[in-house]
Length: 249
Image (cartoon, rainbow, N blue to C red):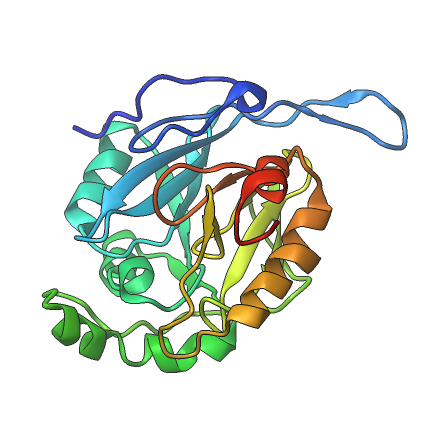
């Protein structure tokens, strides 16, 4: 229990669903045009909740320190993966306030003694009503989530040498944020974008026009070679979505 599956190079990855790891290549210094060696940024997916949400553990392969993104539930499974792989999670990052992404955050916070960071404050109403969401979907053990810090566009979050820019991308949820690592050409997009699809907008706070604007104005301009993890199913690359995603073409 708790293995992440076989590793593969980021530039060759198709982001197979379930449990996997990736090795992100070293970045290139723009100023000196020489390779800047970073720690090995890895990720493992732990499917959680009846919605099979991609709870993601981002970590440095060298020192095994990292963060947990979107612990929606099944916290015993998440803790087992951390223990079995000797990974120390220093924070919890939340992309948005839906039950399958934030429903287990408070339980994990208490288990690890770490802070909950994100999403944007516009999702506070969703986070304050997670227990009601749990009752609606028949999911036990859900708790309302109180982040230690909300995030805004242009801020950064990090662990070790791995720095992620915060992009506020409303549409699926009003306070949805995306975590973008410019050096690694990698983004965790939550439920904004999927392979061949986009986030649903028929839930409270959803706005289809805002969602498409977030994707076209904030994500796709980052470049066709940006690889992404999404909240459900396999990830991919922005270029492929720009060319073939029926919601974007």
